[in-house]
Image (tube, rainbow, N blue to C red; front, top):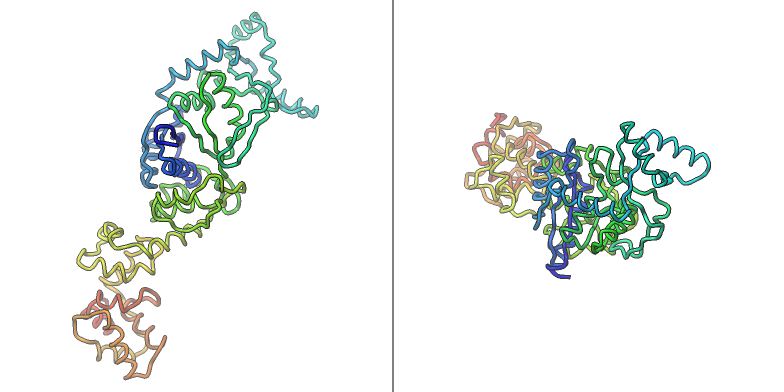
Length: 450
């Protein structure tokens, strides 16, 4: 596969913020494009004029950029209505799109009768038996038709990129409604027309679309269009097995970004969960593309555990070089002159970069010291060495305090930590002490907030 032949697409509806479940197909498509030397199309399926907004459309772009995805092509479904109308007319002329006049209530009553008789609840194609006079009479009553696609009663088979040999028995399906009574399109027809016109070669999407694929293949064929290669991956669910939706704001990509998660952690978990690869933090998209093989994705649901995201994020932060964190440290108020030693001192204690702000406040003060062991604190004050402080100052100093007091281990280090930081936990004080400096350290050992 080459750049000229491979085109994938991610086609969200801009009706809400993308969530971690949306990140999975977006990334799988982007990684497939990288792996095959292809291109990535962002297409906004924005035909739902009432719910689609420009704010959500912009948020989609921002979320993809945060994940590291730069689309090669961009399209809006709403700008392609003429193409959708032309395709619909072709299907009408071919006898594959036919008008139906039943109300939702009538269809529901018919469905209940079928279920009561032990019959499959599929549309019985009663509209096909209407005469021109009967249709005219219904329209005179004020009814407007919705339009169904006439399925051929056959099995549609394809070689799925994820699932292998796959098929859908279209004889078991209702003829799908493609156009509502108000003239607006449902998802199915615009998606096919746009995929065909824009040259999409591979459609990689969630397994909830498998049945749609059987229908859409017939529409591609009815329009005389090339049928793309399909791949249907398992879906991300919550840890309890529930489906994800745009209503889960805390799992929205925007929410995860604002909470301080690294995009590499989100990418790694969204893609590697439910795959043959062990879930681990993978820094670059290229490295992730090398790992992901669609044919090795599991058929079982992929359970998303926020605790696992925390672990991945922490590992990324612990290994993060100062240059990568520098901009965010500056935003937290850490001076450039000491930002690198500060970062190296605190990063192993962070789950997210923003937590460095807490330790900068400990360094810069004021800190309310907690003085617990008078003998240890007095000896610490008396033996605190002159500046400059270096990487060995902490070891030398605490050795002198131990020699004077006999305190060692926790009995030695905890009183000093409480006095210098006001906390009973934190980064190695060998790295923090040179940043705190002698004046603040002496003040804190004297019980002063500094």
